[in-house]
Amino acid sequence: MSSSTKQTVVAAAARARSASLDLNDIAKELDNIASTLPTTKDRALFKATTVSKPLRYVKSQSSPLPALNKKEKQGELNCITAASLNITNFDDPKKVQCVVTLSKILQCLLWDFDFRFILLPHQIEGVFAVAGIAVSTLLKKMKTWSKSDLDLLIKLDVQKEEGKKARRTFCKHHVEFVKTKGLLLADVMGLGKTVEVCLCLCS
Image (cartoon, rainbow, N blue to C red; front, side, top):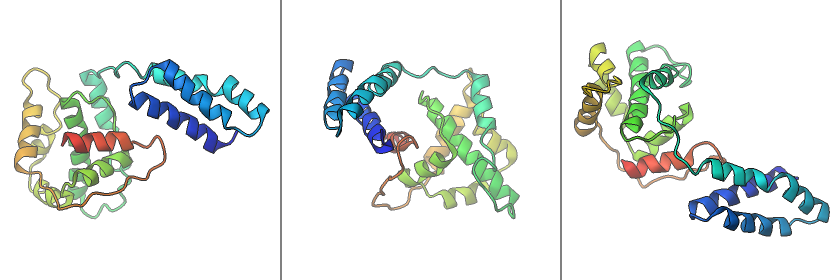
């Protein structure tokens, strides 16, 4: 079976799920796709090996992702580094520190709103672009701040919520937006278009 056919199957499952259809409705849509395949052998192979996989995937995604505890969140933040963000220009160490911190702030903001996805490095840049945030202006401001100020913005305190309050103040008084007419997200499946759009709507 061709890779394009398999992608069509997964896309069909995703469409069905987004339309709030039950598993029986999804199965019907997948059967319709199977009926369009050119040979009996292809149709049989499709039903035997492929149809059940998207159904299991959709069923497994019907419950929300588990919330991370503080230790797990800190571990995810530690994975956001200059190397993971593919930063190659280290002529300005302070700027590099600010880029890494800004990326961590974005992930912390997601957790503040109980958004449980972990952004991949390439998705971070995409979220800033979709939201229309003036990143260069923001980085210039952050470069003048002390390390303790930057660290506060990624603090994961549960009781006093100092980090959460600092992030709210940061967004309210320092984040600026550029004039944008929008853009086209053309990544292949699985690279996080849904996450980026959800964040844009939330913002």
